[in-house]
Image (cartoon, rainbow over all chains, first blue to last red; front, side, top):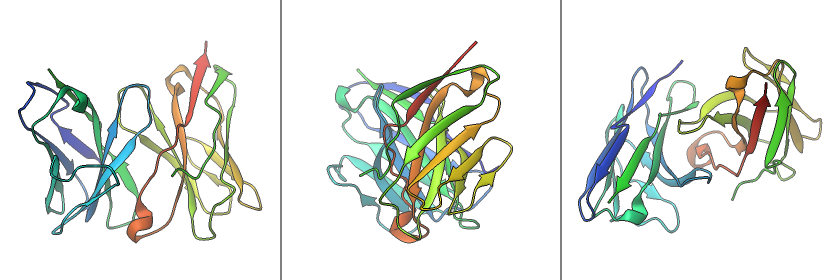
Length: 115
Length: 112
């Protein structure tokens, strides 16, 4: 099956610093990727849609200047949490749509802890 | 907004079939029913999807009612490793409808 990887799998940072999370489709091309956030005991919340070569589309209530998304190639999207604060601590999950069959596959997630 | 309704939790005995219901009464004619599951602290895993016909794969079976307003995911022989949150999602095909919007799901606890 199609594989999506995320790096890092976990990160701890100080308040005020920026953190970059990578999402890669390993064996397929993905023109569209999605970023989700999940707080403890809650469901996944869609943050934004990342399209290769164009600006990301953010869901209502998600600050685009705080969560920078870059989708520079058909296999890589990055999410940068800028000036992170403790309330940004969460499980960040990406997914990618295979341009071959339109199916969506999820990465393993990145746990961010901001001290 | 999620377009599906699922019970918050269910128990199932190991080795027995687990039947997880989902209501999607406002589903459109071109929308599919997808099922994913999420084991604790992992990314969601695709299980199965269907449009109107019943579907079966190596993991599960999906039974969709004739009016398409509800469906049931069946795990034929549940194991302890099937303990997870199961999400039923209605999704279009292509463009903005590609988004998967997660509801609260059903926490399935498989008991030994």
